[in-house]
Image (cartoon, rainbow, N blue to C red):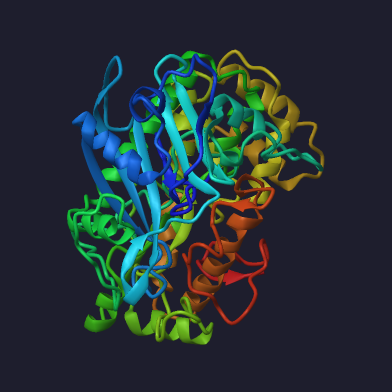
Length: 528
């Protein structure tokens, strides 16, 4: 269930509407016990809505509040195809109560209409995708609305429990694994909750107070037609909310699911499955420079590369960005032949905010926090694991491979450590296992030690940030981006969290990056 704007963003309740008015019957196929805002608010009228326009009209009639959040799907500086996504949040009355922000969200796309006018996209067969918090199950429900031969069906696709079942074999080191056989949503909502890739400020291609919308030659046609695709697009563009507010709601949705899952003792996951967020990457968020690239270029201002590219923030602690002189960075882009949406826009060589790269996700961090709170992990054990191959903070095959030494059961963090040590002692020539064993048995290798090592490494990176190392960082950044798509946790069937084809997230270099080929050295340089 993919929200094609951030395809998988999606938070609490995502309604992806590609609405086309249907003239036939409208049916609802869902268990009667479903207890969410889709059932209580959107489907509370005498007949179910048959398109996004009717959804909007119905929610307004209920008297609640709609906030609009806007995302540029193909890059902030590349509006030529008119591909934006509206993500709306609703709070207000519903049958039997009141829905709160974070209970129900919905979104839909735009396209270019007659005369270069931006309008709501109206093609089927997929009309709407929805995700809503179930008040009884304490989990997210995933819905989809499909139009076929004029008939519209609201179908319940599954919930957070089904997603966990879908991904139960992912990132466990299995030669063959099943993924995404229950619902499409699993490809992006890998942990069963809301997803927003650009979760951290500056939120890159989301409209924010500092990041105004750029429409280029597109036109907005205001009007009062509640079913007119152009009028509705103009109306929603008139008073958009800040993307940062949307991020708050995504985090709220993740938090509530993590808390509910902890209360249910992990929702039936094995210890290995629960510890995947520590040893490997289940979800990712994108981080980038804090100011728009065009602004950096105009002022010839140094770029601030996110420290999370170099080392996991959970290991290093809060760290300032690595500053790179603009001339050095621009020279590196030229050497790798970087182009952004080359077939659609002229002159773009970077994303809106430069150096957009994957980093540890908020969800993975919250999953670890929860295990610490439950006593199954402690911060010393967390640091010991993250210190393995620490210059590869995401998608490290070395660190991921160590999950096989995790025992099937453990009473608490002390028991887990003892059993893990016992298994590691049997590992033989596995260098990663040997290093983790040293981390767990050498009293000098505590969390403070690993943090000092990580901070010293960041300082080494800063010392080479005005030289040829920067070109290597750009090459590695390109590799990290394709590693997202190559990873088990980002792919199921034909779906992918990067949404290539629909979205344009990154510049493309003049070479083909190969996952795992390049890596950072302790001195901050990049090599095989």
